[in-house]
Image 1 (cartoon, one colour):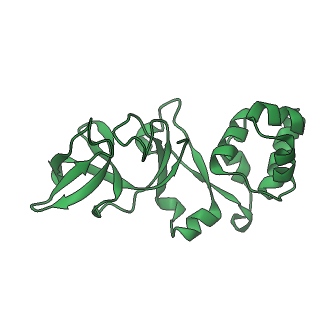
Image 2 (cartoon, rainbow, N blue to C red):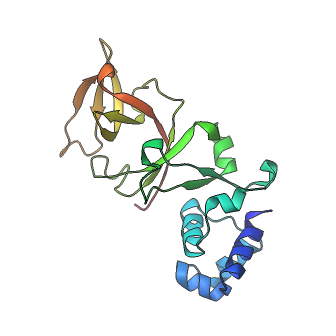
Length: 196
């Protein structure tokens, strides 16, 4: 079942017309129609907004569907967030996974909190982490635990098994240096969705 059919079925089950769904999502009725006809595939942010309004979970989209026909793949929340009531799951286009050579079993999602990475990653942005990428590559962005604090920073390798942790907003958040033994790398940030 394609996303277009899933959207139409969910909208009808919610008892909404295309115009009513358009008003609730701030999307034009003609664009809702194009989504349902399969002429346009919505952006990830739009899919998540529609799903929230129609009050159905992403697992309903993909359960019992042949994996060759799935347009979107569900990305679960980071395990330390699974018990948090507002932990967000994301869905991503299957083609985005292929283009970026990402394996769905290695992906988890989280939400950016704070402004240390502002203008690159903003407060509230949804992030996808590749947990198979645990060896720091200079200049890449990683999620890691330091103490009991989840942090997201640009990492740079230093001698003696140390890393420099850089914030994009370095004026307010100067560089820090830590031993790799003092942090638990979760993985590399590979995907962002949010508003500028």
